[in-house]
Image: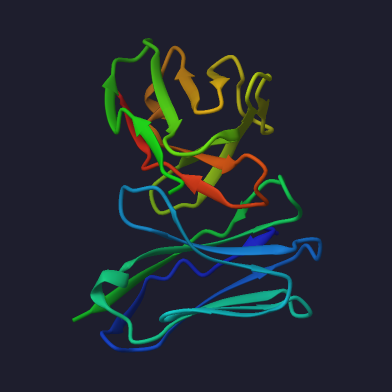
Length: 111
Length: 116
């Protein structure tokens, strides 16, 4: 079993839709949770990070962490075609530790 | 801020030759740099972690004699793929963490290696 599971998609939504992206994990030691966006043939770009359980909002993006369920989510409101990319969740146990990535979900937002 | 560059962005080499990829942190000092490999439609696989002035720590299954990593300064790390073979063709991405920072890693744009 992988430490981090993420549905690879692809996920296709119309412009303006609310997008929900999710990851589950098995190791309760993870404390820091991140979402990266990766455009085709580019390196990942850090979107949001959260420490422990809770919500964090940044513009159209909201990250949620539920440590009791070992489940994290990223919501994108009013999705735009420019949001079309692969979204990778990642998590880390502690400062300076190794990032563990999910497989990535390919998102396509249709105009 | 926190920009990481890689050079070259794309390289083609012949089987049996070696190729060097550079990773630079442009506007910050990076005590730790990471090298990842990514196959199409797959996630990033950590190859090794390098700290400035120290030997790199390789992940299980990664051949340290084939993938030579040097982290000579706080802004530069290099990955040399020695005696490259077609199966080494992949997308190689580096990342750097800010000295004294917690957990953020900033990624370079990646280098696409094609071995013919």
